[in-house]
Image: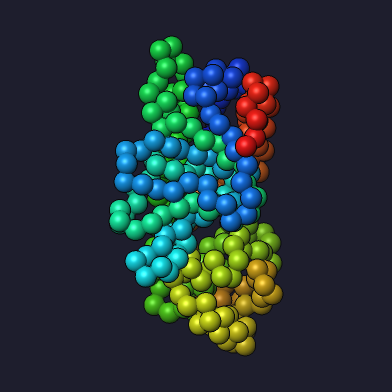
Length: 256
């Protein structure tokens, strides 16, 4: 399945009508800023990562933090997703400087009086993106279910490499500390596993840069990984995102 983007099939004129209907708000965040926190209240917020990268973090009853999900540019986050344990603390944190477009949940799900086609397209795209996010979460679970830290690392690295298989060397999108949280393993134990994997000829690595060697590349086959947008698709959605920013600025929605 080709990856769906939020503004697929919505032209410039329709974007202007949507913005008037939904009154989105675009905000800037610095690295480590909290973008939003989850509560037990009724859903009220939905957001779109215009640029940058963010993470959904969970803090357990002992105060330990874990990375539950990663949100890249063009991905959605917020109250569209029900979190599994309501009495734990969940927050979305900027992994690097971000620009995020915030929408009101009710405005998004309630069609305007005109029943404009753009709103219908947006809802259709949103449903597809929710399904794709569920696919990503399933991939995360499949990685966590691996029996050893080494297997978790190899599964994760194989997945990241599959997003751009034409490149032998690749960078993971998060720090090694965040990777340990994402894999739910002790960081010191993970670093030992990485050293042993290099010794055994499975990988080459330096900080966040990795290369899978032949033995490790053959070890794991990921049959179903989350959909990856084509280059043309990414360029088309980048154009739509830039147009939204232009419209918002023209309407005096200042970055906050």
